[in-house]
Image: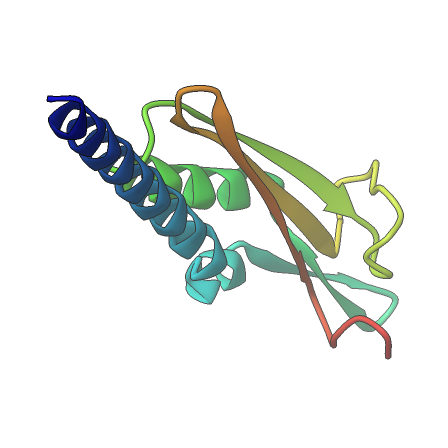
Length: 131
C-alpha cells in the first residue's frame, strides 16, 4: 500500500517538474528568439550638421515588444513584468535623453509556485560589444 502511495507521489512530482520546465523553456524561447524586426522597426534616423544618427524610438520599441510578449507569453505564464533600460552607444551607460542607441529588455515571469524566470537581453545599434 505504501508503494502505491510513493509511486503516486513520484508521478505527481514528475508531472509538476515537467510542467515547470516546459513553461520555463517556452518563456526563455520567447525572449531569446525575439524577432529582430521588432527592434529594427523602432530605429529612427536624425540628421545634424550633415551627419546621420540612428537611435531607438522608445514608444515604438516598447509598443512592439509589449504586444509581442503579451501575445506569446500568455500560454507559458500567468503574470510577467517587462522592464526597459535605454543605454548609450557604448551599451553600458544609462541614456537619459531621447536618442538612445541601446536597450536592455528584462523579463521577470512567474513560472510555478514561487519560482520566477528572470533574464535580460541587450540590443545595440551598430556593431557588437567589445569592438
